[in-house]
Length: 280
Image 1 (spheres, rainbow, N blue to C red):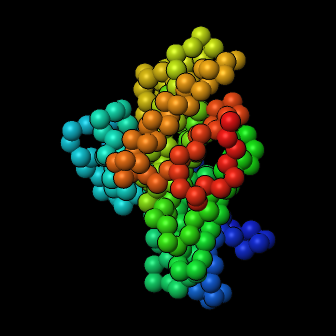
Image 2: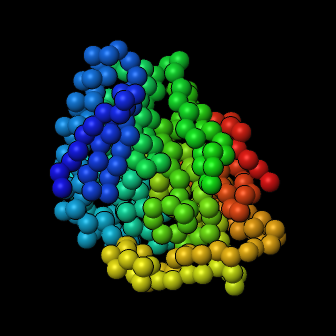
C-alpha cells in the first residue's frame, strides 16, 4: 500500500500509510499553508519504508552502546530513548512522536506560518510563533482537560501512553499525558510513566507481550491485559508511584510535566499549561 494524502472538509491534511495516520494543520497565509502541505506530502512518502528498513535495530532494547541508525526518524527515536537506557526500553517507545517531529519539520521548513501541528494518533508535535497558542484535549475515557501551549513555554511535544493505547503497557494507567520539548521525548517518557503507574494486585491480569503479538519489541515482558476492581488505597498507591517517576524526569530536565489517570482519579504534576484536568 502506498502513502495516501487527502483533505478534510475543514482544510486539515490527512496522511496515512500502513499504521501511520497523521492529522496535519497549519495556520497562516493561504499560499504559505498550501506550500507547507505540499512539503509535508512529499516528505511523508518515505517515512514508513525508511523505518521498516531499520526495524530489527529499532526493536532491540537500548543498552550501553548508542544505537547506530540511518534514517532521520530512527535517529530521533534513538535520541529520545537514550536518556532512559538504565531500564528496558527500545527506540519503538518513541516512534509516533518521532514521526510527528519529523513531519512537523518538513511542514514548516522555509515557510512563514503562525502555528502548526502534526498529530500522530495523539502524539503531537507543535510549531508556535510569538502571540499564538495551541490547545490539545487530554483524554482518558472522555475529554478530561486541556493542554494549552504558548510560544513562551518550552514544550513543543505532547504524548499519551497507557494500557488503553495503541501499544502494550507494563503498568495500569488509563492514561499518562506528558509535555516535553519534542513529541519524541514526550512519547518515550509517557511510556515509562505509564509503566510506573503500577502495583502487584490479584485483580490485575498480565501476559507476555510475545503471546499477544509475536513481533512485539517487549518480548517476554508481562504486559497488562485487564484491571479488575481496585480499592481507593490501591489506586492512590499506583498513581503515587507514577508521580514519583514524573518528578524524577522533571528534575532531570527530560519533561515539562504530566497528568496521570487511573479509574477516574487524576494526578497532575505540571505547569499551568495543563488546564482543568480532573483530580481526585
